[in-house]
Length: 145
Image (cartoon, rainbow, N blue to C red; front, side, top):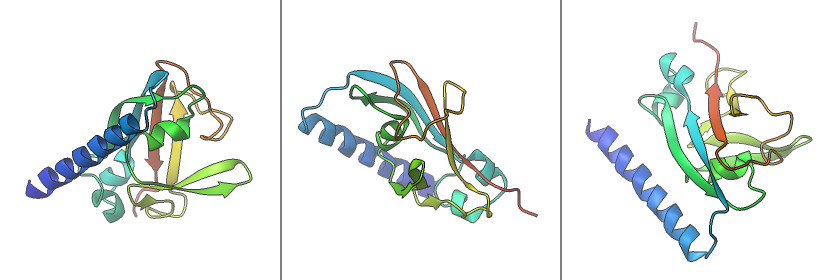
């Protein structure tokens, strides 16, 4: 229970810091989207890497303000979670979120996203969002044997 409270307090502190930085930068959001970041499969399968970052499989959920032309990748970064990316032939590829990285939960594990329940045909950095869009970032993994 104490571990959960400490984790929640740390996540709230990070979120407040991100809000302060955005306010200090003087940038106002042109629109808002809803973002969910989850690793429920990996938690349910009992992967230690997922359990280290989330007890229930939910890493972030809420509204994120974006500037005009904001993308699905911008929305993920707007959650204040630590995001690592690499350049690929298809654009920036999300390698890890909150230290849960590609391959941590089996060879085919990694991050993917949907916008309004659909898998876009463009990379996250090229998928431009609009007011009210719902973006879900999910970590998919292989069931443990």
